[in-house]
Amino acid sequence: MSRLKHNESIRHIMTKTLQTINVTTPLSTVGKIFSESSFHHLPVVSGTKFIGILSYLDLMRVSFPNAVGVNANQPVYEVLDHTTSVEEVMTKDAVTLSSDRTIRDAAEVLANGKFHSLPIVDDGELVGMVTSGDLLKYLLDQY
Image (cartoon, rainbow, N blue to C red; front, side, top):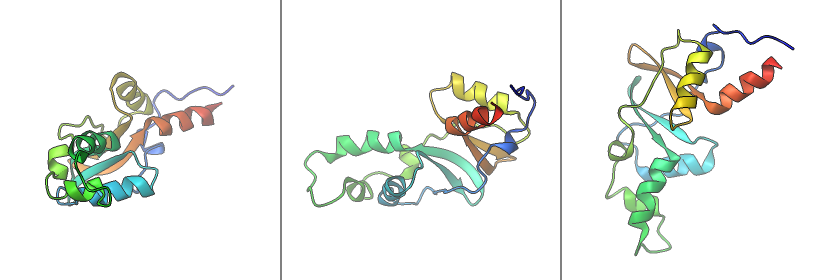
């Protein structure tokens, strides 16, 4: 059995090519991204600066209360485009780590938090993302 490396950099498992949104992205576009991809979290950026994160669950929380009385032929997200913004829904004070931290650090944060995605931010700039799935894949690779 191989031995886990306790000080391996988070850079080895983070996803570097990311789908991002900004505060002006319509929620209908966000809904489409979630429905057409395997993403459950989208980093919100201003240029390359990380400013928050929006999860599928965040979008669902605002979608269903506003869905009452909506025309069944008009997607809920399109209605939200006129009533709610990404900035209102996103988590602004998201927990982040820098890319010089270890995989163990990321595992600790994700294990103790109530979320499954961890933005990796260096000097305010989004450089990657680590998910609980990334950690499980890393663990499987070790055995």
